[in-house]
Image (cartoon, rainbow, N blue to C red):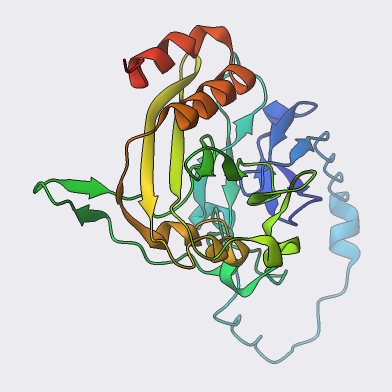
Length: 270
């Protein structure tokens, strides 16, 4: 296995030797990693040198390891490594249990206290017509998200390590740096452009608009990527301007072979 440390978030991952020389995305922040060559193992000393070594002096038994030591690779949880080449098979890396996707590394403090602990979100909300609305409890790494008012994109998110980006006068800036410019009151919808990876590449999974509470929903953006999901109150229909924003993003970010899927998920409304 090849040990790689992410230069952006500090996540330590172990990657199979077969991927040496390739590139991939950090499973936590999406930063591009260049996978180096495995280090050659040192040759074992000759048997004669081993016999010449004096026997070690007796010592007191070693203290048991502390309870917060990270588990070894044999007990770690495998998660998919996002290879940059869609036509290559997905490899796997081993991440210690305390460094699961979405958590800060054990030896590095989180940028914001809210980032180290995901919010608790109900799996579904009861809709007025008797149906249940599924609410995700975290933002999906392959998917794209935007928050709109009735005509403009107010904020956007994708898995690039920068977190939520909020619209300012000259473009978009990280939410945590422009907290004073984030509107506290208004009618906003969170639009999820769901994406999934299949054998032949990326495909659209769903396009869903969630209605957010009208007070202090957007102020959650500075607390971490997922906290805005705790303000979902229901689902919403997209108006023509919002639908236009979705179409523009899909055409900019994805290859033409998935554009027909967009038409199936978001047909024209007369």
